[in-house]
Image (cartoon, rainbow, N blue to C red; front, side):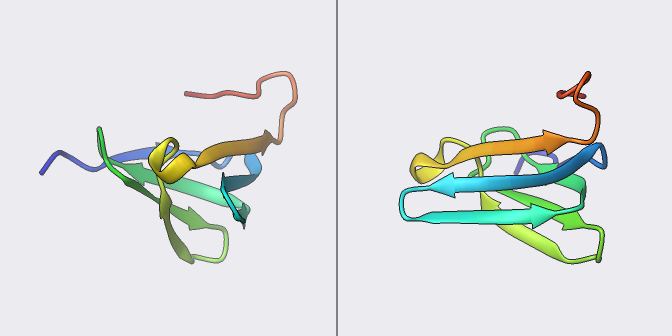
Length: 76
């Protein structure tokens, strides 16, 4: 199994995972955990809740987010 990578996403206001028939929104995301070629992502939010969602591209999943700083919308 490949290594789980951890990313700071606390610069985001929210993120949404969108796939046919469903939109899943996470407010105050803080940390993203993922594996190279993995089929899911784990996101920890500001309330300490862990969300396991499909990775972008899996089952048609599309990811979108809003950055707290509109001048720097992507941080990694």
